[in-house]
Length: 468
Ligand SMILES: Cc1cc2nc3c(=O)[nH]c(=O)nc-3n(C[C@H](O)[C@H](O)[C@H](O)COP(=O)(O)OP(=O)(O)OC[C@H]3O[C@@H](n4cnc5c(N)ncnc54)[C@H](O)[C@@H]3O)c2cc1C
Image (cartoon, rainbow, N blue to C red; front, side, top):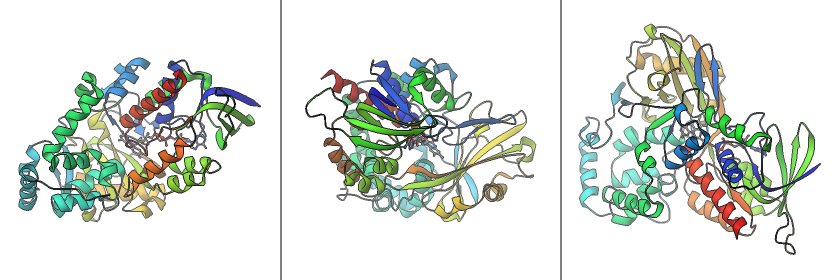
């Protein structure tokens, strides 16, 4: 069987779905193919025993693109916003310590005198970032202090990338810091300059400003977004069907001819789809494997993008069995603590409906780039480990009454040293295949909001390419 579409999106995680939805809205005949039996990729919400568990991302920060998408899908009011003032804690000296956000951080007791001096040096002095690339750890040591790296930056990096600050590239993972120092010789002074430049380039997005950094989720789970897009795509989305091969076709004689042929393997057997525009929204390694027949360089570049593995361990407790007030967002754990826990989100403190009345849901992350072996443990061992490590920190008095463990062997792409050059090399290869696009979390940041923002940009590029 063979099909012909104007655009084929491979992969129905949030990146692929958002791109496909925008393409469909632009009137482009689009089909989306997803290997798993359900769409959503790592976004999975499960309801069991009165708990609402997020097996992947727990929440997301708002930006203009996600706000617009939710509004367009009619699910704006299904979002719940976390209290922006909810305290965040870091484990320091065996205790959970409140980390003040903003200028209060400077005065906080866990900032060493050396770090404060370094911050003042940054504000009033001038420095230059080394070329071509510097690790996040190298940057923090050069500009600030080892203590800041251990106590604040390391845990923060775990929270976003489950990454290793010694390997993550500052330029790729936190471009604003790199650009700030480059623009003004100072991170503090440069940030304002870069933000101003970005605002001028992107225009004013009042909703983006309003929702900036406001943590949110959907009342019925983050899969609400996935279900809403999937419903709009209808039969254009095919799940349980894997793209197994991609070929580039000779379209030199006919500009409107199909440029790619994809081989699909699913319950309906083998099928081919011919398309003018191919949008790959799959993990990097899969993109490399699928594009290998087009150019061996794709496999080499994509294959070099490492992923961290993460176990997501959600435990439910009777509220009366927890001594800690759980007033806040949750806590992060510096690697120097020797614990396996990377951090814990206090779901039921942040959003309503996460646990039955009188109970609390806590979701912890184990593994990451600094402890890859941890995810090899059984779900039972991981749940016991998390309970044991949390017990003294939260004054847990009894065993959990609810357990859910999800192991993601390749959870989050690592924007490691050389990432910027790798993406540039991929772009050069892509230029040899007009009609080929990438919409994925290894490009513009792994957060849901940046995936959606990038997906919209890609869809717009495709739309413009049809108009020309
Ligand atoms: C544990 C965890 C916690 C996270 N926490 C947060 C958070 O708190 N906040 C936040 O903003 N972000 C968070 N993220 C990051 C964010 O969720 C992801 O980066 C984002 O959802 C990735 O979406 P994606 O569509 O790019 O990729 P994916 O979700 O990986 O989707 C790729 C899709 O491609 C499909 N596919 C693969 N091969 C093929 C093939 N050959 N044919 C067809 N389909 C194929 C896959 O089955 C998958 O559905 C977290 C991620 C994880 C794993």
